[in-house]
Figure 1 (tube, rainbow, N blue to C red):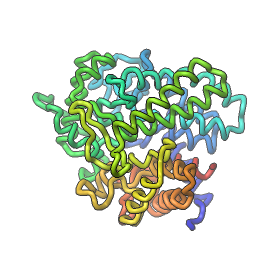
Figure 2 (figure 1 turned 180 degrees about the vertical axis):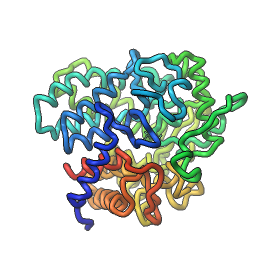
Figure 3 (figure 1 turned 45 degrees about the vertical axis):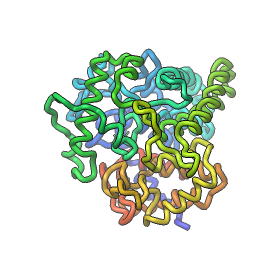
Length: 422
Ligand code: GLC
């Protein structure tokens, strides 16, 4: 058993949040990501809830204030000056105020709202905040189900790897390779000023990321047009699992607040979502979940830790738990984002091998609910040990535990605080 984090470590976690707080929103990391990021803010709110509930609600409300009229919640909100970030508002050109990116991120917010609501000490504050957030969360989920499931398969699609939150995951290698990059304007990356290149996506991946942005800009950021024109259209495992749980959590809130129209829609999305994942993403032989490339109409072979989010989604099973045990046995620290015996495994590079505190958090919570508290404990203990040894880093090396990527990283600090608060 790993001892609980010391009061000192918890104070240090809070100091990370306070240091990245810009009043109403929190930077993921001051050097690398100097604005508000969508799913970062949702996790960060969990951390705030452990030390300052009203600040937690404010984090979420600031994010949702940037929601688009069609319901989408953008993946970056560019508060303040653009600073030295690339691609900044001048590349996105979405014509929003405050400026935002034009794509979304995993919809984990409803689950975080429910988490905070159920633990809130200030009930009046919590009820008022949930009342305000409920219709906005619902509009975002409706946007996903209506606009991102063009073939009515029951699974939602992403048009850019950044929408998965797991940017350079091997899940996207094949569909991204098909994205044409001709005549790309020259550009300069800024991420490499802060992090060594072997810990970040490659140049070719970056070219394709920007080529996609150009397509969407040419569509005037109109949601249906973007889906029609995007050369990249993937039913991502992580996004579908996260949306499935978020639908469930939103349904619980909608019932509690007597929002009847929402209840009916959410029940339907949960049923179609479950069938869709079973039909389109699950390999019937192995029981593992894989992404589906809608442009080629096939399920891809790539295997990543996103499949274990099935536990978070409430659809994990023993087959998956056994696979998780094998996956964990192959590295010193878990859970690696790609299995150590997979040819795509690259233990230093971002979403191709390193351990991430937020995915550990979600999968551990799901395992606990599934009745595998032994595995949940293992994941939580690994997160804690990694933070204790290497600090609040963006991600960690699964073999030697080295801290990688950005430093003083908000969501790493936030999930430690959230787990401690229970
Ligand atoms: C990277 C991650 C993404 C995260 C962002 C800010 O782009 O891949 O998931 O939201 O950094 O932390």
